[in-house]
Image 1 (tube, rainbow over the protein chains, first blue to last red):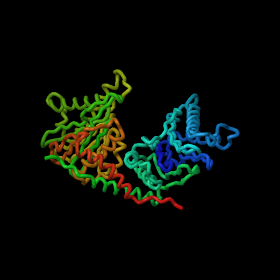
Image 2 (tube, rainbow over the protein chains, first blue to last red):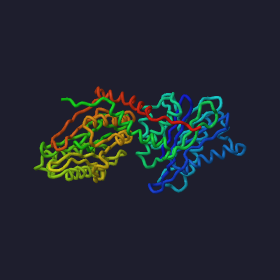
Image 3 (spheres, rainbow over the protein chains, first blue to last red):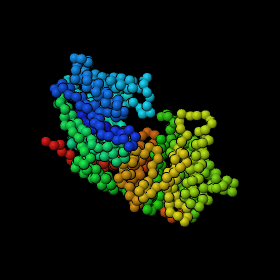
Image 4 (cartoon, chains in turn yellow, orange):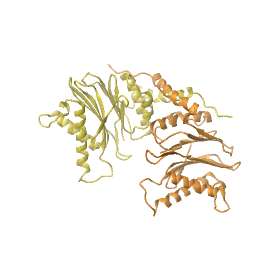
Length: 245
Length: 245
């Protein structure tokens, strides 16, 4: 499993992904699930993936090949005129890879499917965030639904639903995401630290603050430990129930 | 889907279940998923169910028949010498019903499976809580795992994990459960109010406070509305993140 969140804020786009992959319970590894492409001043695109690791790595490799040698393989991801064209290319690549593995070859019990979050900005238009389905179709985040989750989405969702605010700062977004990831990690063994992040500032057209939060990161540790106490205190501060009679 | 929680507290057993059943998105109904049997002074047993409604209703009907006419059909649920024997009987009945529908007859796309929570007390031993699987085997709650959830368990789990305390009062348990149910209802259309509850006081050997919380219950409304603010405040009170450099 996996847990990735992409959010559209007023000040830009926010991405966070875990790094745990597993094939069964006794075969776990750490893999990066976030890839950032940029042509400074022109275009920045971030992709996060959930699902079959071979599929998502193949998608990223194909996109990288096409990005690096545009003269040989066109169209190239970084040469697209809009985010819509970028996500179409990503989606088509995803469908292509799944189709190659899924049809005609050996069948596996595990699915070859994968789901992607694709977000970024191309010069001349606003930042946009998309969720791409294994079938190659996709949806875009909107003011009504300003964030997407993929992978193990349920445990970390209530806090996002309650506390998301599109006007929040990147620092506040980091805090919110770490609480959401912490709730998920505590409940599902197949989601694990470290967590990769990218905070893309709108209209910067360059990679923003990007890095990795390790399990032993002091800030993450303090959030993880304090959150239980804060939740209990929040619960205590709700009015008490009284049975009738 | 369904959401039911059973908890073992120092002062007794706590049960809460939602009442929504659905077959598809356009066929939703309200059904009671909690049944309480008692022989005052001897034995109190509460069952909550998640899964195929026909299966769970058949299980309850069979158990009721057996409970009401013990001279005709033995053994009767309320005549068992221990909670372990009670849950064995419930589990055997569940397996019998699933077997009848699952084998030899028409097959359905929907599963005939169901999962049950069975808790109560038989005179002479402590209150006990069990989770019964469709296969007819079962596990018991312990001090390490003092509560069980069935149905749509994920959204409402983080707050239970963080705030459960076996020493809590029934009033505190009601508050915690309503927050957990509220998070679930907000995220999954197939879980819905009203919520049935039963708070069984240890060693009372009689049905405890039992009733129903409606969607428009003023207390539930205030919890539902306040919780978002309290969560946000709790998040705000965590230390702020600072990017390096």
